[in-house]
Image (cartoon, rainbow, N blue to C red):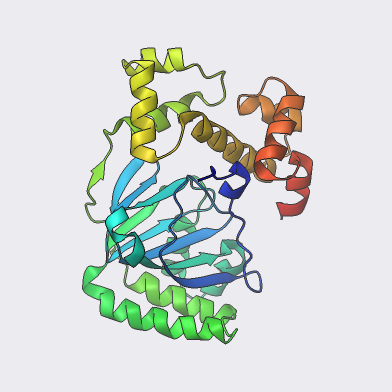
Length: 283
C-alpha cells in the first residue's frame, strides 16, 4: 500500500452553498493525521477503535460524539475486526457562515463559538442513551441533504437540535494520556519551531531513539517524521490564514530556516505555494 500523500492530510471540505457537508458513511476510515478548514462533528454509530486528538487518545465506540474545531489535527483508527461495520455520521460546517443564524439563541451561539474556536480542544461526549433520537434526526437531515435542501435555516435547526442534547459539561471520558505517542505529540507541539533532533527528543523523554520510533509507529500507524511534517504544515496553514506575517517569517516560525526549502516542502505537502494557499483560502 502506498503511503498517503501529505497533501491529502489537509482535507479541504467542499461545503454545499458554503455552509455544510452532511454524510452518513460506512467503512473506509481515515487512518492518518489530518485536519479540516471547518468545524467537524462525528457521531459513531457502529465500530470500535481509537481517536487521537489534542495529544490524547479517546476510545471510539457506538454512541460517542466528537466535535473537532477547525485545524484540529486528529486521527481515526478503527479495529480491523470491526472495520467493515464502521458506520458514522459526519457533518462539516462553515462556522463563520452559520454563526449569525444563532443570534436569537445567545446560549447556543456561545456554545457554538466555543466549539468552533481554533485552538480549542476537541469535544467528546457519550450519547448512547440518545441513539434512537439521534438516528431519527440524522436520517431526516440526510434526506434533506440528498434533496439539496440544507439551507441556512435547516442547518441552524439541525445544530440547535444537536446542541440541545449535549451535556452541559463534558462527562468524564476515558483518556489515555500516557501512551508514548501522546508524549511525542506534546513534545513536537512544544518544539516544532526549532530544528527537531531525535537525539534531543530521546533525552527529554528518557527513552531510546529506536524505542520511540517503534512505539510511535505502533500506536499511530505512521512514521514520526511524517507526523512532524504534517504538524508543521498545519501550523503554517494557520499562520497564513490568521496573520499577515511574511512567508519567510512563517517558515522560520514552523522550523524551516531556509525559505526556499519551506516553500518547496509546503508546495509538495499542500499542493500549492504558501502565497497561493493564502490567496485561495483566506477570507
